[in-house]
Length: 171
Image (cartoon, rainbow, N blue to C red; front, side, top):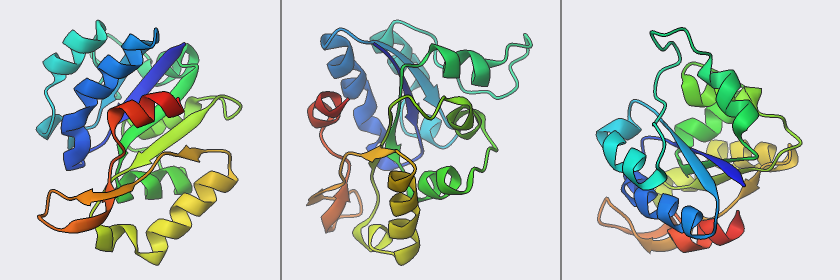
């Protein structure tokens, strides 16, 4: 299966090379889309190495490609992990201000679309975040996690991204 992995700027982005490995281990082809903030947390070259494919980052590549359309057509599954509170809000509202959110609108809604939320527990419990996810679920998206665990902020609680193996199994 062709899986398009969108990576947003949550600290759990550091887990995505292992997620790519788990998906490829299961026989899937994986292409990655990295937001600007995610690029501060996980190396583009690491993702390219484990996926065996170039990593897309730019809505306006210099060669004139239309990656948001090409990648959306290629993808049989869209997986966004980690899915930050910001990403969930953008997806719910249909905002398209970067490559990932633009191509999320270009993916056929009949295809599987999954989010793996990850954020601080207080953020996760905000009514706006819960409402955003509820709307996405009503629109056919699936969610994997978040789970309880140790958070990057030093707290414990629900908000940790599900383990890469769990996410790969859900796909």
